[in-house]
Length: 470
Image 1 (cartoon, rainbow, N blue to C red):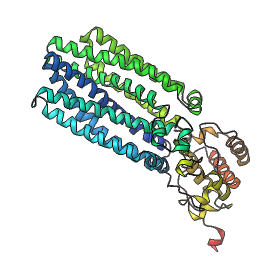
Image 2 (image 1 turned 90 degrees about the vertical axis):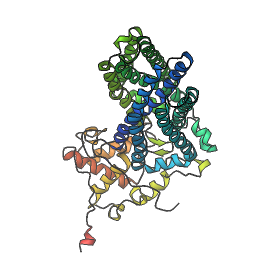
Image 3 (image 1 turned 180 degrees about the horizontal axis):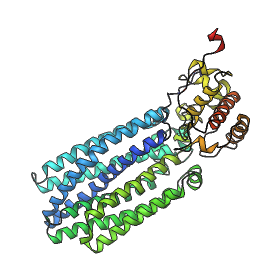
Image 4 (image 1 turned 30 degrees about the vertical axis):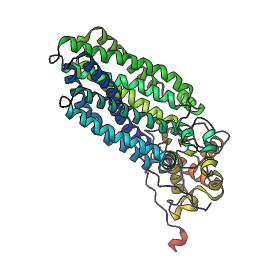
């Protein structure tokens, strides 16, 4: 192993953090994609019902729903899907590299299904009523299978990002051991349940606008269908959450109990209860499927359900970004014998964190009295900014609040030297890696920042050494 390690540049987003950027994009994508996947199966069921019962008016409803999928899910979803992985790649290239090396062919399969899904939604919309019903029915079921297949595949990658779930993968390196980890099936089934709730809400919204265009019996039948599927989906998803929770690693459970704000859980509970109540009401009285009720419920699903859930999911992976071997700060934290991967920790402790990172300016690789504060700021950004706002007092777990009043660098050093050790560090935080002088530089930066009110510029300026000035 050479002195320089395979670090990538660090994308630091002051105040909100790169993880928040990813969570915002992911929330929009999840809402769009879950609507699409849930709707594809619902529409396939309705098409089967229309074909078998000879109710052609149902096709009018299906076509309206397909149009909304084209405009909403397959425009915003197609943009935000790559947007998630682009922002994640910028935020943590090492983590994405680890995923690609494990799942490149799985990702290729997901893209094949996705291309088929996008192609089919256009075909379905423009051929409805123009080809025979039996052929169209086959296409809509292929569309439903393809839509769910994209979720089937991507959940395996997302679950591995949380944890392989067992030690087996570290010794086998098998793609199946990585994909079918113990969190996989509860995660898949939980999402599958909730997607029907999301799709059902949109379904009621569309039906409410078509009340005058459909025979009363057909209208009420569609509303009942959406309501019953929504009720079943919410209850099934909530039940699967219990199983999902049981498969979480200990660090994630610890974080759920101590780091995640209690009001996050309250928001999710409130929206689940509100959605379930809405479905029960419309199942009993179909005339209450009003647009001014359905649209706010759908919006609340985003702000009180999807976004908090995605934020929590991003958070409970910490300190890892992938497979319990890559920390969120890009450090390879443990050996993976099956992949020929060796931990960087000992090498960094021996050579120094700044010295082995190729993107650290030469003027900061060796700490001096002149550059100590800037070196400390560089360490804070490179080691800590994946989870913290390291230059402010607001936003994502800010240093400005966590070290409030600690203006003496020896006090900060003593705290960090005891807190961020392999023995004492919280399970959701990486411990400090690097030389003692680098920990002292980090402490000096934090103390200086607190003496300035807890807010400093994120800009790193390399001081000119005394030798260079001569």
